[in-house]
Length: 361
Image (tube, rainbow, N blue to C red; front, side):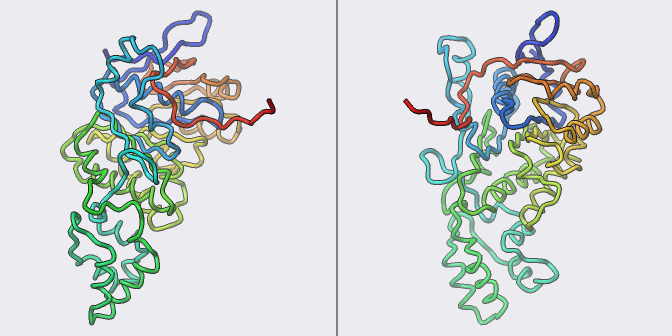
């Protein structure tokens, strides 16, 4: 089966709307403002890809919207629900919640990314940077306190400065680090059908970005194996903003740009979801060949979408202002012609969702 059913087409004669699953070998941009049903609808597409392809999916999930991807909502006797239970779906959780923890090893990071975590510049901080490059760290037995203690005990003043930096930034105290336990990198290497990285529960704002960076760097390092994977980045403006501010943000954005520009031929395909196109780095947005558009009201955003995605007629893009919840425009390589769709129901429950106003009883 090369096509997946995602809902009903909106038109004079209602028919089943389908996407060509084989055309997810291009980068996809998914856009819709808050309340449009964007996250729910994205789940519909991911479910159908999991059911009808063998494509492994990695989901960077900042709002715990996909942490229940392994569960079934209803109709337990249905064929889809039965098949769903046989899928290998792994969910790694951040923060102090039950479930398998999301951890990465410090040594999973490239030398440049280790330096970014410690806010080291290769020129301005050349001596400390060089010490970091030559440090030998065993990922299985890494102990942050012992590392700082050994550096501080050194007669080398540069090593002592590096120890002060590590301690002052409190980087080695992050919950993110795997201390003798499994790393998310190992899970992704095992290639389950879906891996959900719940990155939103960390205390330090850099931790989710470093978790994403470690996994994306590993995928890029192994790109020559040409083993396909769909990389879903929800709220992608947090991962590849147009103007990254910190060293970690710059390293992460540069990695996504590299995957966007060169990853397709290696089987590294992006699926980016966000509320506004202007919040995504233009070098990433311009590489997307598929468009899923839900309700967007802002004229500036609609103009940007029409300009970037020339394969979507401008009048069709403007129609997004009138969409009801769950309605979408699909255009690009995964449809033969632009189509308006009312999305179907999901098989799995949405983990997030709006908080309701409490009413007086």
